[in-house]
Image (cartoon, rainbow, N blue to C red; front, top):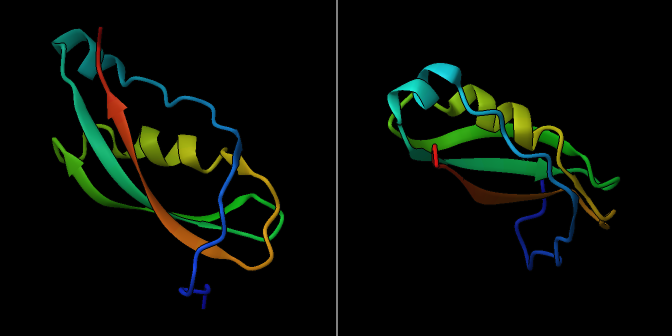
Length: 90
């Protein structure tokens, strides 16, 4: 179970942007996805899940695909945190 005590400083080293779903882009749909991610000691994302998405199920897959490729500086213990990814067609 990841440590829930004082969270270490998480420094993002690499954060590829999510792809914009073509159908959402064509429709001009914007939204955001709140994801919960667990970062392993090597700085890789070991687990990711959608906590909340608006609109539902439009951007979930691309948000998860993106955060799974994120890399953080190595840390002492696995840590879980939340991040919001915004999708804007402009």
